[in-house]
Length: 86
Image (cartoon, rainbow, N blue to C red; front, side):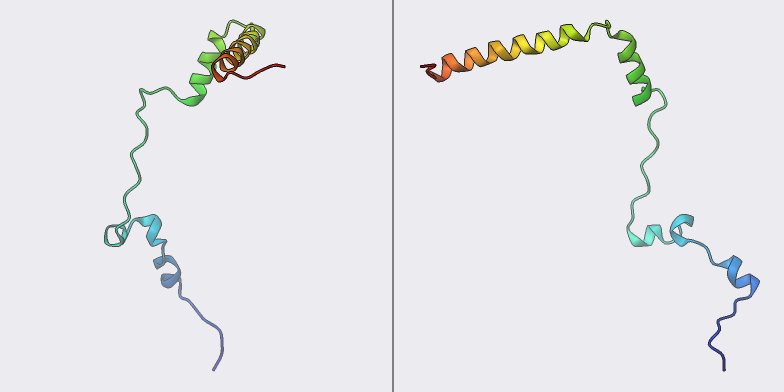
């Protein structure tokens, strides 16, 4: 008696991946994969290219606006909160 396991060619080709083949998926309660995205929708890469093209090329204006907005918000919160600057 040997400890080797021998397979015939039919055994090897007959074994498949049941999960990949979809057999038993209905019985196991696994939901089928969702359908692919609508081809009419814009892909993330296309949206990035469109946003880059629409950018005015002046990022310093956005940074300046953020600093001004933060300064104004800090002043308003200081007035509302009644903080003292003594």
